[in-house]
Length: 383
Ligand SMILES: [Fe+2]
Figure 1 (tube, rainbow, N blue to C red):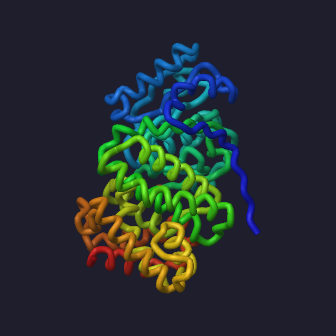
Figure 2 (figure 1 turned 60 degrees about the vertical axis):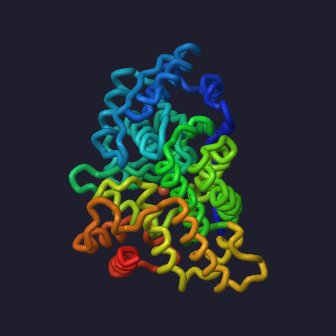
Figure 3 (figure 1 turned 60 degrees about the horizontal axis):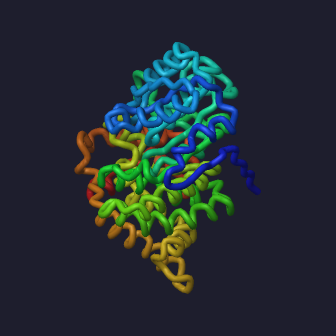
């Protein structure tokens, strides 16, 4: 048994952002809009370009560009203040996962009050947010179609997952040309995050046939396109990556992620490791640890990625997945856990606890205790 719903209207294609104003009008967004983004996109001219598009179409935009990687509650509260000051009707969130998640949280706080931790810790009921249009500029997050936003708690640095259908943006405008100037390392890290969404979204507890259908397409696209997207940055592979990321978002957006993300978010909490990089580093050791409980699902993934044939037995196909992923990650120059700035084995107990407390731990195909997370971290560090 499963349930599935999606309320996001998706516009996808090269140049789609040029038509942003008409889609906002069609979806009933008001005139006064808060553009939630980061300083890098201001420097790259993307924020001004979108503000200009909106102004020329009669909207009244204001740019709020204070989002940093691993956004915390403070930036969400500042964004809510900017929303009120501007007397905004809605949010246009432009950027990677950090800006999209912050934009979703700001829209919720603007209409429902409270702080992100009030919602994540069930101290306040969710209610309808201000309308959000998500414009991804990285191919990885999938946040443009998901019902969650990950925000860092003030003081503790814990990752708070806000999750509710209300957080699914009503509009996503996905333009692959916006990802064209991403540097190779950011392209690689965010792209592996998208692959992890497809893997975890289709193999976690609660995975269902619709998620697997999206994931199957996403896995093939991302596996083939990412090495080309980082090397040449050609338009076709950028297109396929943003499409793969969107499809992966549709896969995990109705199921969950699992322990790769739990560990990645723990690393992000303690060391500010960018989300995609942390996922890329933890992917292989976590899948290796999960394998005894996930032979059939991982064999399915291997076949979807073209790493095994239909006639290969499940054990052989699952091993082919791990071997193929190792080669693929090496070709993308993904570092090892021990190479990440700040990582020390003396932090492993804390990291394991943080990962265990993550709300997605129960979704992992292998039951995970704190000691299991510690074992994965040790395995990753020794690799
Ligand atoms: Fe992710």
